[in-house]
Image (cartoon, rainbow, N blue to C red; front, side, top):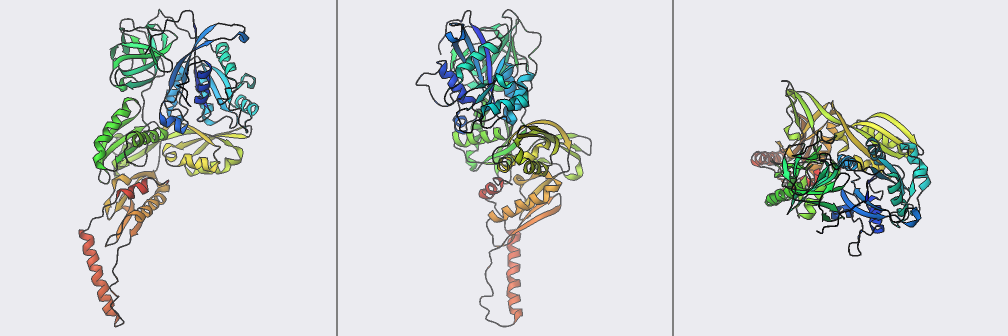
Length: 609
């Protein structure tokens, strides 16, 4: 780490790039970094600000990445030689990380709102635009990917004006691939985005918009200083938990860490203060000095709360210790991820894990398998249910195996979401049918040019399995979705248990609406009957609600042809042999047990249904 000279008389601009997934945020950020000379020849690579291999492979941003850039205005601007420092924060694009995006935006005065010239306005474009508007940020609309053959920049700009109300003439046409439009974007940042406000002599107030764990320095806090000044050796206090720490080092990003002397109001940087637990450094929390504290924290802080839960089990029980170590390492860099040990009679020892959403769950599982070489079985994802017992006690659970019996429950409530879907008008009919299948109720329907925005209230559990894949399939990939959890509502929910050879298999228990209980139970038992190895006796596979069997399939027994030696003769002889065989099978069934192989669980839990 190197120490730069202090910047004197330099003007700051803090901005973020927001867009729908795959609209070219990281690629455009690359061109901006190249244009401002922030990347040497050795450092050049695609998606520079995406640090995880998984991010670059999938083309998505998972973690916010800040970078400090120096910009000198050219002669063509009429202000040649004026020097500015840009703090760029690259934000995640997926709905799962909406809270992180809102905190990153709180660290800025303006945003570049990207729209794909070939795809137009998408669901998360609208959500991100309104996030920026609610935060009173200056929005610079940028129509990206104008180099594509199917690009319609004027149409995309017009669509943005119709949907969000940003004038089409304000849009800058650019290409993250060729670098076209980048000089115009840099000038617009200077001209349109206001400088940061804040008094360096006021009490320290700094917003944490991200954090990472460093093996040597502990947790590094990524902060925007709103008021005051922070220097090494200062004693700081975290508002959410009241804990005190001493600042060891601090500095800025370029995009690596650069050690500095201090951070003042308006600057974006990092702080190392010997924090060992990333849970102490919550995104959205406020930092102040213990000897000169601020009166109130920055508003809008909420602790990270997992909303989707799933059981993760190693296929080889000997990997349990390695898996625990891997989860603890991932937890160091992800305060929103939670896990606790759990056991299953069918799958052995594993962990119940909590995630921000389905993409978050998929990323954690893939990182465990890829970076730590683990083979895992994941149980079906579940949401948090709120159960009111007949005794009046209210409890919450996300594990179907922990559901109380029906006679003890007065009512069950499930989380609902406000789901926004943007799609071409020709696909409206099939998508509305899909939403009705998922127990959705329409709120409104808005026409935007040739596109339609559908807003529905849908139970969260209904979109957990294959909803996104079905939506993309029905709309030929053109539909996009965004959601937010709104409230809890009472539902006619049932717990479906699966029995194999009259013994319950806890890992396959699911909570489902009564109308879908039979069809789901039938699918599971049919699939299990296909994959369970045949025994010397017939093995029943059953789905039950409480004590009532709703579906059954039978794994046929191996059977010797005991009539092969009978060449005719009286039928009573044949019946005697068959009855003798039947009694033997019954004896075997009484003393025999069925071991359900791991492959059977993998086959059932990985099925789209």
